[in-house]
Amino acid sequence: MTDFRSEIQQALTRVWQDDAAVASVISQESLWDLAWPVNRLTGRSDVIAGFLDPLRAAFDGLHRRDVIFIGGDNVRDAGGQWCACVTHYIGTFNAPLFGLAPSGRMAWLRAGEFYRIENGQIVEAKIIFDLPDLMRQAGRMPLPSLGTEMTFPAPATQDGLLPQGGDAAASLAVVEGMLGDLHVYDPKTLSSPGQTGADGRWAEDMLWYGPAGIGSNFQWAGFVKDHREPFLRAFPDRKGGNHYCRFGDANYAAVSGWPSMTMTHQGDYLGVPATGKALTLRVMDFYRIAGGQIAENWVTLDYGDLFAQMGVDLIERANGVTEDYASRT
Image (cartoon, rainbow, N blue to C red; front, side):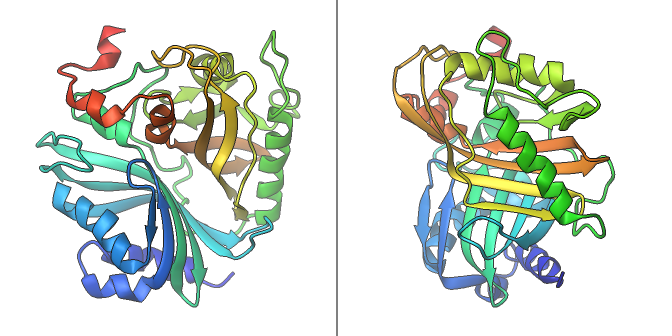
């Protein structure tokens, strides 16, 4: 693999302090899709005005800290060479961001990011930043919490930045096998074939790191309790896997759909009663594979957009919260 990943990572690190780096890495005609409430930005000038400048204004000392940065050839029909990363935007949250009131304290705004690269520049981007987690850090969590709320850690193996070695195709094959099996489940037990056990897709000591509201959990039982069961009871007809990008890199793989899931809101979810509405969900997953099984999974979901479809404005709700919602449920 060429080291295009390293060049893009270095350029993205510089764009927050060096305006010249913006032109060097972001194509003039690039198309960016971002999490709610930003959504679509068209062209470099819109990206600067709609994303870069708001973050710079909101966070004093803004910089990014990547925990995973990988790249490869997209195996989906869209093709192309892509980079994907799990990162945090770090600074002192001293001014409003997209209407969210600041905390005046240090904050880590985590994000999942996918970039399509042509001629050394970003021509397309998909970014999910976890605004509900920023709300949580500010003491205004607008949702209950199912799992453990925490900053996303680096991989246990500490090799998530530009990894070397490993079998990229084999890593992606594990993930694609898991996704195929996970789609089918028993509505009574909520179990899916091929997920656990000696020949299962997930390691016994798997770690699953999810967005605010879901939180993070440990082992398959924790994943089912804190995420899978509440989600399937609320959205029993969910269908996923509509991915624009899938690729492997060494012992890692990444997939994303915009949206990935379609579903109907048939049960209460995170405090919102069933609406009966047809919904979509934007999804990004990053995986570390060890011994032919998934050891760690980092997940960003655009819950701002999901709840907006339910009729709930999380920014408006958070700005009205005077104590952490999770502490009252």
